[in-house]
Image (cartoon, rainbow, N blue to C red):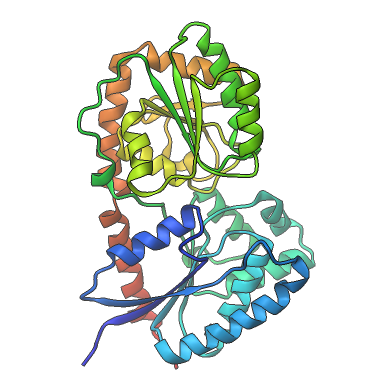
Length: 370
């Protein structure tokens, strides 16, 4: 007799690039096989479709979702949307159907969009709509205390909201021997978009290059600004110092983390960037802004240095980078702290252990009412 708890994970295709995909992959690869049976339901749509077709795509996916529930008959449904219009509406429809059929639902919001969350507090039809969306699941998981506070102000009961983190396989990222010796290598790893501070970092790099002409920078990632960034680097004749290598995953991605000396993420906005966990796991000092989930966990002078200007000021970014490059002892202290912190807080075994407790609690306390 099979007494395993059955979990249906819902997310975009695992071929999609991003933190949510990485989070779901790690769950599927590391969940306790002796305790759970998991299945993955692919939701979302291709960007090649025109927006007018979205309602039809959602309808088709709902029919597939209904069929999956009938066949797999899960004990818990774990949905992983981003805070984007189409995603939350689609997953609200899925949640309503699942709840109507008696299935417990977890809503794990993998990102946060201020252009949407600003409607939470306006006391109008939109805020009432968002209240219905976030009141529908049994548990909501978010990546920052500030996101939790916004949901509480919307009217969601605090007991329904849990703050979680991303996770990382620390052993894979741990470097064999990090020396922190010049010429230093800087790493940016995220989507290549303006809101990630890519051009502020480029401007900062030029300031540092006057003093450290052998300094190198790798932009790892893909995005709508990749071709523009490459052109600007070429126009500035910086190809020998800066490389845009595109999206990397697996051991190719890990290689850049183990070879770099400092991780920089001068973002304007974030959820909880997975690269923060990966940088710590690789023992990299982290330079970044205090946004999203980083406000809760990123301490100036501990894991790295906080960029305090917003928008991020290239002069400040340059000063933070040079402060570290000129203080080898501080870099080593931060590296040792980050290796330990990653193991204790963000390792896949630690985060999966907390998720295991949540699954068991929902199964025992709420249970399937089918």
